Length: 205
Image (cartoon, rainbow, N blue to C red; front, side, top):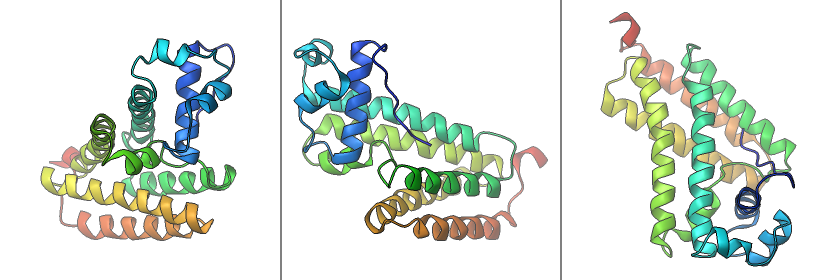
């Protein structure tokens, strides 16, 4: 699942972006100051404005785009394959739970914290978050279409999977248990199994 790793050998811009994604995700956008980002990234003062002329807001948009792209690839890795859809869902939620436990419930969705904070205060970041979320939903919907679901229903189910995961992340981080991920995982598998009986996978049409 999602983890930001940075080393001093990475270019300055990348280190700043890595630090921003990590700190925004862990402690929030508003609570993260430019100084703490530069300290964490071991970048010289002023370098943030060199690489992100709009300052923290530009950095926020870049963090959302980058985190969104990384997480989209993660969704692709789990769902764009020939494994049964039940196995994909189970692996996705099981590994998410393991990541939460391994990081003391710090690492989950890379952009949810930023999105919730800035949706009503920064339209550029709101749009970037919406684009990222939609890209993840599109991957899930495409896989569900190959399972035989009509386009509209595949999209609706993909939104349910996505929202269930995000809600389970919030529950897990506040309760310090992964029970919600297990419960949601089994609910989604049961729902998909119940509906899949009435559809014909694309490969069999």
